Image (cartoon, rainbow, N blue to C red; front, side, top):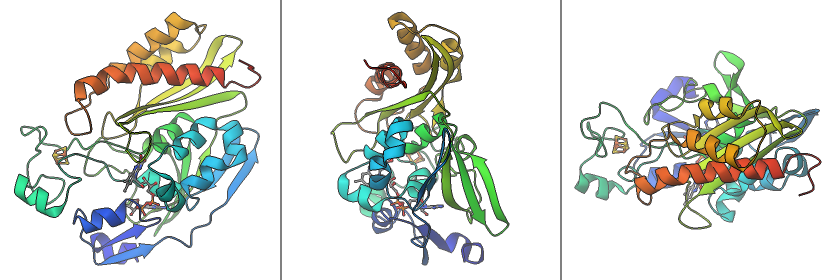
Length: 311
Ligand SMILES: Cc1cc2nc3c(=O)[nH]c(=O)nc-3n(C[C@H](O)[C@H](O)[C@H](O)COP(=O)(O)OP(=O)(O)OC[C@H]3O[C@@H](n4cnc5c(N)ncnc54)[C@H](O)[C@@H]3O)c2cc1C
Ligand code: SF4
């Protein structure tokens, strides 16, 4: 259906992001293709690997025992999305595909018309960066950065069959065309491959303790040998149009013993590539300063959650 209808149709899973956007005429489509037939299982594949069907709700993922025990950062990220009612309807697949956000775009039709439309919908300029040829809307999924940190792989099903894709390759650095999959491909499941002895943590910054999207966030997965980091992935949320992996900080940590100074230095390095713009909640200067803080907190939490560590 999606291949036949092209841009005249969209998939809908929980509808928690899509329906408000349809009301605000951010999307105008003739047909919605319901995905509620997608399976909703969590499968413990093998040591260190788990598969979560795209139809699993965020609430179910947040309370799933095996996820909580072995992929704590992912369960935490799912449990921090929005609010309880939306987590009961919103799905893992929908959260991976959720639209990028911008204060000038996530507004009613009337507001956008009065302010002047922008290139993401109905207009031809960027209102945040008027001389920019591109859209800088912000990747705002809480679970996508954590799925990347945990070496996540999605299964995609489309007109040409099935294929696997690392979650890190699922996104583009483009606020409008932000997904690298084909529009007719459905995310059917997510496999996390943290591996044994990997610990993970997600720290989210937002104005209120509930409902709000992230305005900065850090997803960290770590493997330690004693006090020495042997594997590490750090991915930032809400500071770019895609989940931003900070390789320089990962390289810095790998092979080092973790102590307060090392963690602080890694967090400084991680914050450098984050370039929040003035298109999300609170001041973008403050958000930039807070990236260092959320990274530091997430690394510390991942260390505290490592297997066998009793605090
Ligand atoms: C008030 C409010 C607060 C929110 N706060 C947060 C937040 O803090 N963090 C956060 O991450 N999100 C937040 N959201 C957004 C949303 O609720 C979640 O991202 C949710 O996980 C979306 O899942 P869904 O199943 O409802 O997706 P839908 O709304 O059904 O779909 C979202 C998008 O994904 C596409 N899609 C859905 N499933 C698939 C699939 N399996 N394959 C391919 N494409 C698919 C749809 O076509 C659509 O483009 C918030 C939304 C609201 C209204
Ligand atoms: S970043 Fe610019 S083009 Fe993109 S949604 Fe915001 S105002 Fe529109």
